[in-house]
Length: 388
Image 1 (cartoon, rainbow, N blue to C red):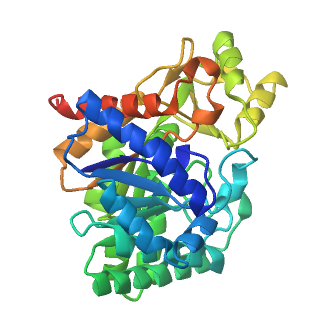
Image 2 (cartoon, rainbow, N blue to C red):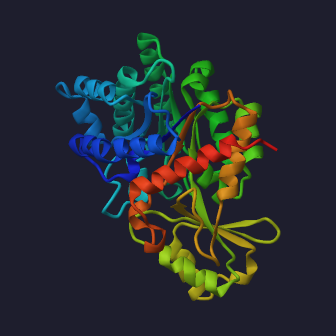
């Protein structure tokens, strides 16, 4: 098992900004973990890298990549995975639907992902291989044609296969279902992969090189319990678990007026905060963003008492709980880790991904390195406990 944290928590769009984040934040986190006893002092430190399209282009130009390889060696660190979901700016501006652009109908998305794997092929250790995560094809609001999505994914699978053979390293891409993505829950994921494999001339290569990035926050928001979902995806359907994102969502009782008031503090303009509300009979209602959920309640269009629970796509730290009356989906993360402990060969790449540090309410904020180190400790403590 390789555990890292995703550097998308640190604002950086150019390669120079990305390297600065590594030098200032990542190495500080590593040192803090060593001090706390959560990272052996003599062991190389795993990095989950986030690269924008601009940064990836720059890293592949001139002598930047050889210099970065030297930097990794000098600092006893390595990159085993890259977050290739956000193509462009990810902090300090309105992201929302833009994080799904360009989608997998676009050659720009293909070229960007190819660049990520060109980088991974040269810097990821052979012992761990290299993974990259990406969006689930498109966003439902784009009404994208799925045929070119599948065609481009098949194209990238063969590209990854060729790189893997050339460099003798295991490389793989993980599609990351997200609420209101082109496929977002367990059932839609299984159906999409069935269509993808059916279209491919060589399903074997697709199975090796295109898998799933299982984000525990996203599946929790869908009210898909971790163990049944993971069993269906990996055991029954045989879909490769490329990577597992350990992340946590907000939860609330919509019938509690104080919970509705408390959730308003998380309404911020940068990221999508999709809401899925569950009725007592198990049926779901989806809201594309938190402001639309609140507006539906304020206008009377949605009656809070009709729902037993609502979950909000707002990543909060794994180790801390929001103040009552709000709750979280941390039990889904724990269930994910418990399933992985019982199925140790199912997935080897794990990444902590709480990218919302900059937009958390003040009472949940603390120095970013302190937060990340505490999340690491929480995960490691879960792994140390006996599985029941």
